[in-house]
Image (tube, rainbow over all chains, first blue to last red; front, side, top):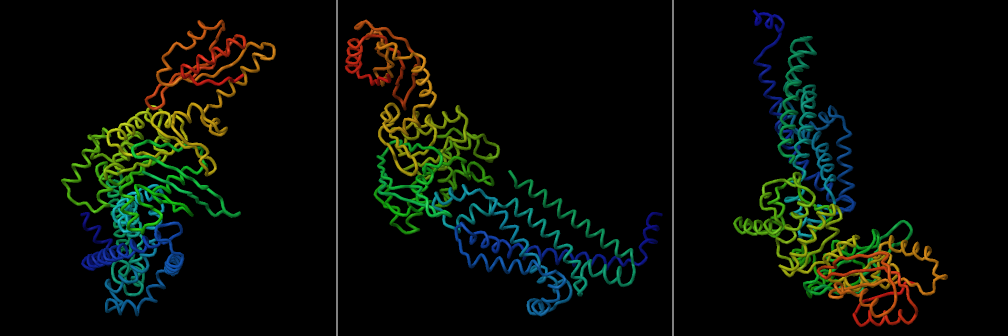
Length: 225
Length: 341
């Protein structure tokens, strides 16, 4: 009985396509988060360490890096998707589908993540640096044994925020043939007026965002002692 | 152990330069507890940061155990720093690591990886500071005094020759301050480690220092044995810092109250007793030998490190002859005195 109602309300929905689109979105999301983190952490560290009064203070490195990050952050993601098409093709062989969406997602997200890392590092008390230097620690040791463990909870929180931003970025990628739930929403929900498909993709993305937030919060709570 | 020669340091400010350390010379002997006392802004923080070159001085030498820290390479400096333990006002513990890992940190930074060796060393240090049962806890669950004990254990884990204390008790309540000072003294005596501390608290100097230097506006204005400086400060600024202002005000009131010009026979004496003299019935002896009368206006008994001392402010009522006689008795009994009026 109840199944019948659901079937009536979702006449346009092809569940196998929804499944595939969900998997595509998770695939894009997973790799985009992974690469944004891997690039964003070192960039954030260099930003922090080269800033004024820090261990590797260097005006030029800081200003140039900071400028590049600001430029990348000020380009709207939809424009970045298009501008990056040649680069993306060069990197992964195609600018279409889930695979072709990952490079622009990473370029869109890592500058944001790097700033979050920089801010987390700024929160560390100056006394910690005095202590580390007094122990005779090298810069690399300070990064590895002190800075990274100290910012771990903030790092997880930042990854959570970045992953959630990336969920909506993946959807936007659908406009230029990116694949995933966003693609489905545009091709069926928007272009063919299939409201039911649109609704389901939105619900799935809401669930995704909720899950990311809950898991992120949980990990932060464990790590924060 | 430490020789500081002609140390100077200035900071750039909007309007020219400000001298924070102005031609300081100091000598700290092996095994002693050396206190540097001064008001905030006197330059003591910068001075202690210079001792392991966290701040690089503009000029002058810092020789620790025969090595001039200002003349060596960055890598050599790192090795020298591992021989110098530091404890901090705000403890500077890593919140992400257990107490065990916090104490083990300097060993890790020295590249020691033998787990059994590290465990033995950390356990030994934790039992020295009385925190063995806290090894697996995190700093957030500790009180201020316990955190400082962890800081001390961490500073000592590398078996340093020198311990620097940067206002280590300033963030603690009086009782905890007392406990931490006793621990420092015990460490100084048991391990024979030289301690240099900076503080603005007179209490710290009184409790544990052998030698004291008084710093003001980047200069050392007076230095010597803790005893001499605390009981008989010479420089007016030292006096102000050391003899509580209360006591000076009190003296003013007394002078005003007695109207001495009407009582030529009345004098006010400040007597300081040290060591054995503290326990002698000095006033009794004087009153037996002369025909003078006394009244005690103010008195204090305390210890400087382990040495008992007393200070009495007395009103002396007697003629010139008995005053002279009293003075000679006090001299012969090695009681330091000052005729305040």
